[in-house]
Amino acid sequence: QVQLVESGGGLVQAGGSLRLSCAASGSIFSIPAWGWYRQAPGKQRELVASITSAGSTDYAESVKGRFTISRGNAKNTVYLQMNNLKPEDTAVYYCNQKSPPYFSWGQGTQVTVSS
Image (cartoon, rainbow, N blue to C red; front, side, top):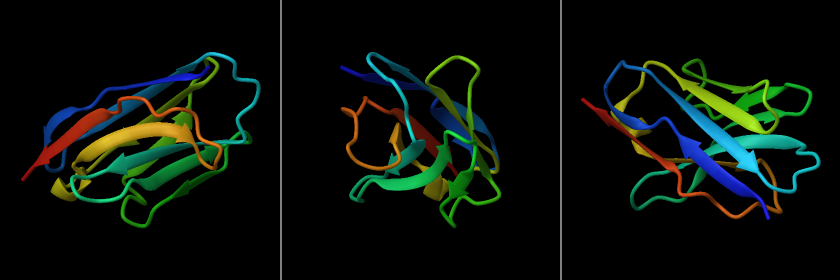
């Protein structure tokens, strides 16, 4: 069973930065691509960034140029550097595989951006 633990969220003013971390543990043999997702109140969960095993990245238009996804040296760790944060970035952020079948979702990490 795979466990996903997200961390690094918090309260930040608009224009500020945060770095989110994701640690995956359990029986993981290979992950084609990791994704960072977010879910704002009353909205569906959306994919905001992804990274393949080869290091190719992709971003939602709303975060392009501001967010950077990367993989850590430790196996099965993924990061999301978020710069120039905006109030509309406020959400709970999750990591998981980019495509189904998804692992069980972690609790996520809350990011709140004040204006």
